[in-house]
Image 1 (cartoon, rainbow, N blue to C red):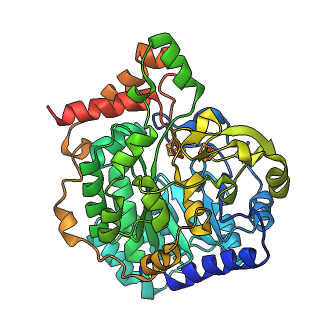
Image 2 (cartoon, rainbow, N blue to C red):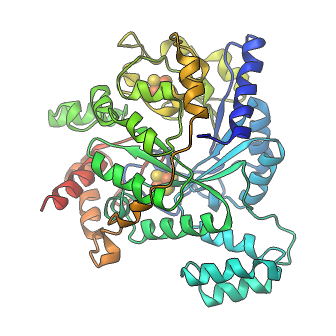
Length: 459
Ligand code: SF4
Ligand code: SF4
């Protein structure tokens, strides 16, 4: 079947339990941000800009685990910042798994191999030697790494072990050239690919996490799916990026440009995602079939942002992962206090102007699972989709020229930095070389970069 039975059953049980109890609003996925510090400064990153913090500003392990208990979401997506920087990330993952949650670790991939080497070294026995040999043969670890692994790890610290309840969810926004330009560091795509290969050899589950922007080349997206499918990645999360930010109004009023010059509007999103169901036949795209129909412009959905709450150092962020109108001390308090009827788009009308172009998964994917805009036949469609055959790995994807940037000797950071430091970027209040976007926001600087990529490709 398309998704593992145990995971599907756990989520179905959760929904049925609350439907029987007639709970009006409940959590499906907790977006947990233990910290906002990151080792990268991706162009357009909303998180590192909105919450400019240092390592000392982070949630305690107890708060992290307590927030999952508090909202009872069966799935927890640990994001940030870069969650692998969180000093007790191993204990956090372990604690959430012990609570019976499905855990997604949303990472930029740079520290994955280190964490997996720790796993191999922990209680090393000769039985693991074939794995070490395979990793050496594939050049995913060095001889020195192998020696350290064989020496073993004797401390009591827990490690991140493979589990059917856990996914590495690796941020990938395109093939090498595009991705490294967006994350503003050469070599990141290559590191992600090596980390994914190592994870698959060791038996971890891996997903990729992609945000689609106005300049995203849909053809490149398909090649990206083909390439990662050939690496036997288990699934793909994909969501449209958009911007509701004050920067939008500012750019429009000062520069006299139309919003659609910069941002992915609803119409553009539908155009970009018109083939998502075809992609879903070839690749394991995460998300409900109903949400995919919504993205393709075939139906409307009502925003259910309360079902994917975000918890961070400041509290429960309302109304959603993208917009911040306040933080609350408790999940139930947030459910009670927020005027949910003031958000989202209903019958084509935005209840809040900032929601106008939003079709992001954290607002609308749960709507599909919860049946908030039920149409006859939806249940059968969902069953057919979930229980249908899982798309097979596309091994011909190995032929995709995924390494089309720095690894073939084309450094490009200078161009990225120039764009970040452009008069337009600075006029928009961007701190030089320190922008970024975890979680689906876009901005003109990012669009500038992506336009440059497109121009470069057509040279
Ligand atoms: S429509 Fe989008 S921006 Fe508006 S509340 Fe829902 S998720 Fe947030
Ligand atoms: S988008 Fe980039 S800079 Fe922002 S948190 Fe994610 S990896 Fe870090």
